[in-house]
Amino acid sequence: MTIVDPSQLDFDTGRANLAADPELADRFPSEIAGKDLQVTTMTADDWLTQIGAGRRNKSAKAVQAYVRTAGKEVADLSMGFASYAPSPGNVAALAAVRTRGSDGASLTEAVIPLLMRSIEDPVVETIEVAAKSIRRVTDAATPGQYPRYAYGSGDTVWVIDAEGRALHEIVAALP
Image (cartoon, rainbow, N blue to C red; front, side):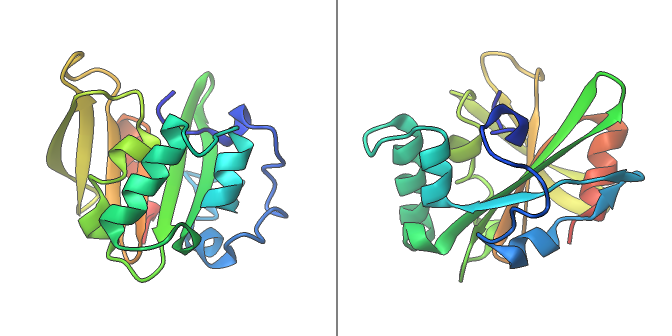
């Protein structure tokens, strides 16, 4: 999976787990298409600990590269995750990478190696969804298959794992 889905990690995904970045948690929509979102936020260090990443791990290197690109420190970075089922058997995931003091729109492509690690040769195109300009990311090895989406707003980059109507509903609900 290219997005770290909170259900895959060993921590509570309830709204009580907002201490890492309550401002980021507040930016998530409380619901999408009538489905409540359970949001989890964490610092970059906490995220790396949760996924078992040591300093030489690929995920740790991706975090370091991302903060270098942003001109920030790891302490400036926090992440949020939420998912919901738009229909039975279908899960839509939403992740956010907040880099305090940055411009999220300028970091949308920098987030690819961070949260879309399975995409080895990214093909990025700009598309319009819900009157917002977002990036559609696919892998050149599998053109058009398993697209992911990135959208920058404020100091946050949103990463969306959804298609069709669910994609539109998520993007429309974002700031």
